[in-house]
Amino acid sequence: MEAIVYGKKFKKDQFPKIITCPHEMVALLIADRFTRLTGKPQAVIVHVNVGTQALGCVVHNTSAAYCPYMHWLQDAKKQRQIIRTRKNIKQMISRAMQPVYLTAGREKAISPTALLENGVEMIATLLVHAQRPLIIVGHSGRDHQALPALVDLVDMMPGLRVLDCLGSDVSFSFTHPAFLGLGIGAHKAIPTADFILVVHAAVPWIPYINASKTYRTDTTTAFRQLQSYIASNKGFTPILASAEYLNRGAATKNAYHKRLAALALAATDLKNLLALINSYYLGRCLHTPGHLVNCSAGGLGWSGGATLGVKLASDYLIDGNSKGKFICEIVGNRTYIFDAPETVYWIARQYYLATLTIVLSNNKWNVSRNSLELVYPAGLELQVNNLNLNISFSPTPDYAGIAKAAAGHHAWAGVAGNTEQFEQLLPQAVESMKKGVLTVLKIRLSKSWQAAELVSQL
Ligand SMILES: Cc1ncc(C[n+]2csc(CCOP(=O)(O)OP(=O)(O)O)c2C)c(N)n1
Ligand SMILES: [Mg+2]
Image (cartoon, rainbow, N blue to C red; front, side, top):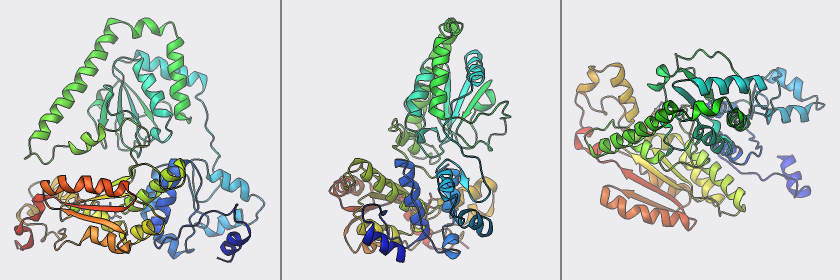
């Protein structure tokens, strides 16, 4: 703290901006998202041991999202010895700026590299000759140049399809006919594909893949290399222009439109609560890299701090003056509580970070029941309500009120209890946020507000 005062007093122009953050997880989340969007390194200062532990699952989320992260004192003995010599401090920090998760030990520095020539030739040949080629992406969209490079590659290969296992970024255009959508866990295209190119995606969940070759390379460069190799190879041209390939291109397009029609139909069936339509429809608005920031791992409590980080980064990239993009967070009711909202909205007010938060309140932790029913499809849980399963959130907290109170009442807070109220309040919430006011709208999802949920069934 002495150094902070010194820096603020005597090194004004060189000293970093410091944000006070009353919760460690939120601090790391802000830094993580700021770095992801701007590429600028950030630092989080926490208490040496208990503060480190309070960083909690965000450490896991950050490393799973390939956000370069250096933990200075985790393995205190060894890292202290390495860093405190001061002689190699510059090298150690610049090494940590590379996409490595640095906890201890000296890992190899990685810099963006191109694919080796024989790698380009091999992948291109396999892609062109495959009958049912598939590309799986996960995090490649972090580099905003990678998406257009992949679209160019796919466009020249009729029948080539792309599956996104949603690392945390928009990696392929959701409206491209070659897009198979999001597949987390499994997808029917995987066992039937005869060549799969996995690019920047964590794949331990795919039991079918036994990679014959792996390459460490810069994604955008590799897509561009493959595209130009295929375009300039005269042997490939007649293959790609053959009737067989054109037919399979048309079939891919057809299948895409059929999938959309099936989803549109599912959307009209209000009884089918498991129809996975919401995320898909939301996804159809996503063509632009950077328009979605997802968690990438399962540690809840990430979205509030992450939203602030994205807002800060967006303001910084435009003019540093609250003129950034429209930032909206959509969050479940339990997840909202994990976020440490009293910290998040205090910071939001303190640093003029206006965002729109929509809390979807179904009055419970529904996912826990879903998981239970998957394991015990005919179990005892079917005979009891959420109160008996201890996953009910009744009586529900005033989610929007929590935010408003944390922001010293400098916030717009609303609750929509039905469709009409939602239609009325949403435009007001959007307007409020656009005016620079911190905005939180809670939506009470109807099914969960039945009186039966309040009375024990045991
Ligand atoms: C730190 C942490 N603790 C516990 C979990 C397990 N978990 C996954 S989803 C969930 C509940 C989410 O509830 P809510 O946000 O209300 O969404 P809903 O299930 O109702 O759709 C929990 C506890 C987790 N992912 N992360
Ligand atoms: Mg819920």
